[in-house]
Image 1 (cartoon, helix red, strand yellow):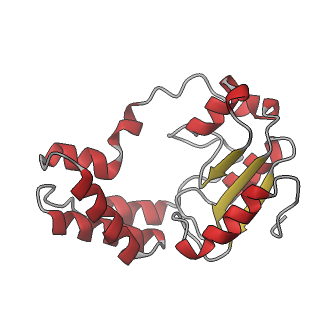
Image 2 (cartoon, helix red, strand yellow):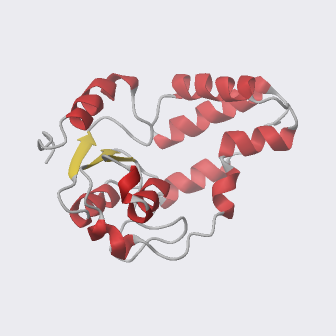
Length: 185
């Protein structure tokens, strides 16, 4: 979402734009024509208890459980959570929770809306999205690709919210060939 606004406000700073697992509206309720988060998934995700944020293993377990709920790789999520823990200079629970959950985004003022400005993006744009994403269903990516002139959509059939390492080559190839249409379009 930040990249969309940055490309709109500072187009000369970009040579191309790749949007991954996102939508054209700010956090909060989706527009009527866009699917919102899968409610059953969100209930499961936010219904399990928070970990002891001062315990590295509990935090890694929490991340793995969340990844499994979202359809992502729990082993990879556990490793990422451990790396985030290890790189964070403080083990204070509040600091660890903020780093792990990205709480800063819940405080962003996402006004004014930018969806209506998407047709102003003239950069070569690639929209990448997981077919199985319950957080932002794939129709959100389809809307982005439709509303940004010339944008290409690459749907990763086996992906959910996280991009699998195995898809890196396919994404890189699509990024490096901005004038060509992707196989998924």
